[in-house]
Image 1 (cartoon, one colour):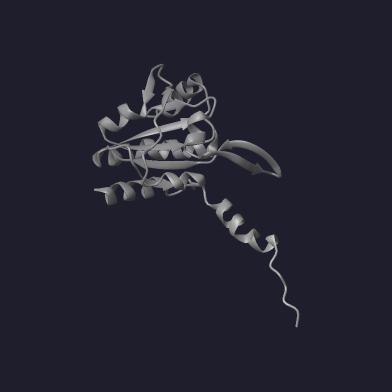
Image 2 (tube, helix red, strand yellow):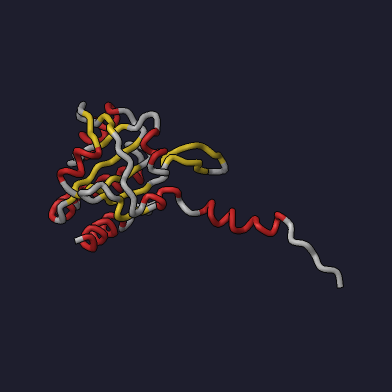
Length: 179
């Protein structure tokens, strides 16, 4: 009976499996990439300045004033005291301009900073700026992702492809687990 040789096609599955793991997960346990971004209040914020104050909950979201992003921001707003009680702070990042953030913050009385990553440089560093698909149309955008970064600047937890409902509870549980 003839022996069949394996072809390159037989290796297609491992490459496909590797492609499906979010790039953001590679940061878990590593030093968080430093950044400095403008905020909706007219200032600038550096990650190194944030971590000096305590643990940082850094969440990336697609767009101000959209339903999912508004629900997520309002959930963080409503639970900020629980997050602060655990020694942490919340910071949101999207590609929207500082003026859009100021409007979003004012309309929904958000009590934490929103940062503008207009050119998506920070989103790329964190592995959250990627190809997305909606209604058959492909485009580049931010994948909703949250990072918990400790005082040493180490990413302790990554929540990729966040589902808004119940996410704040997951973040609070992760903060409690960090101690």
